[in-house]
Length: 282
Length: 251
Image (cartoon, rainbow over all chains, first blue to last red; front, side, top):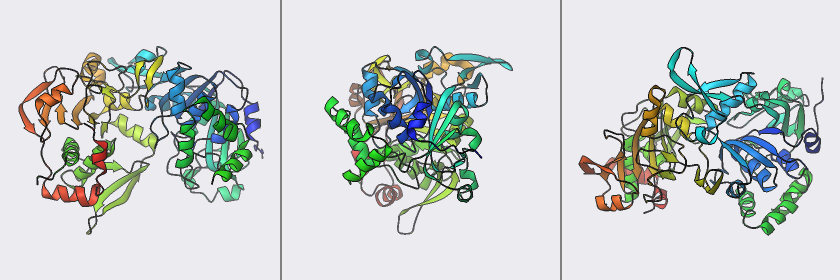
């Protein structure tokens, strides 16, 4: 049996500048933040990020890693607008490929199924089609009057997702209310990395509800044990969103000095250092 | 009942938008619209299906003491919501940072897309919602910065865009726009926005002054209805006892 355990730094070592990277979770929910932070402090650059955006995209924008983002929204949930993403957009610092959030699912699903596109009505008539000239329409072969968006496959070089539990082979469990689109991110990607709250034995993992075993070893190349690895986003039932920390994160967008202080304290350090810095706050 | 507040009128107006919907998913965005959908669910539209805002399809009821009760009816993670959107048994009530006279809505950004003056939340599901099922809007602050001649980015598509699409937009249906001042609909020959009712104390001139384009006016322009005694009791004891809706509403 393959032992796929690795560290955040070993994951980053498998990534390259210019790659297209998909990040699982949703908004500020179950984001693989320890992996995102490891990218943020790496030498990687010119990344294309595909996500249901939250502080993952914000953090990578703040550290200048993002050349292009493919997203339907970017939000911190309780703080509706992501301040670092906003700042980057308002400086014109990245290419924005903003699409309908259902189109994003369809693009990942098409890639997962090795199809060139999947048809949908979502997007028709909206300015999503105007600002994304790479999106085409297609007439139904069964009814030429029926025009649909041909949502192209969103192929990923790598996918990063966070789970509650995993075993060392890469079988995993999400124990919160929503799988989000993490299985599709993994299936759309060449290299698939999962961080998790705890690595457990296969026997212990098997005691999780069967429906929670959604992302499985054939979808996973590497497993990183990262307790509180989704912090400060929520990872139910292990922990909720850290609203106080999120405010601190949001406030770090107010000035270069505030950002530098936040970066030095929480991002420049590894995940152990991050956890230690968190301890000191409380 | 002279002590009825504007917020309570808005809650009832939002509830009324869901009248007749039957057994479909009602998806209100924003606090007042959520109170409205729940009021409809607890009174005249008991078959409405609703989310708890996370992943649970939730049956809302009222205990004998008047507390809101919630019972799980089903599992609706995000991908199931998308299925329901495209399936069509859904009525969404979204917000709008900008909306024009044909109901084109913007929640994406203000300014030029390549480098916006203000990046907002993003198009979210607005394109897919509007082309797939009934859509209403809740605008807590009715002013000319929201009601604009032309939106900077079309997220939710309006009646002019839908008409241009022809058959592909056959499921498009803009229903109501509820604001802090009035209720609007699109029941005009060209599908442009029309004042349907004014909230008590609001004049037509006030609404026109707060709107950046010409509005049609319903021939039977009415006053938005007040909550009845039973509805008022539900709003005040069960749905919004702390009066949060009033905090959402601007002028």
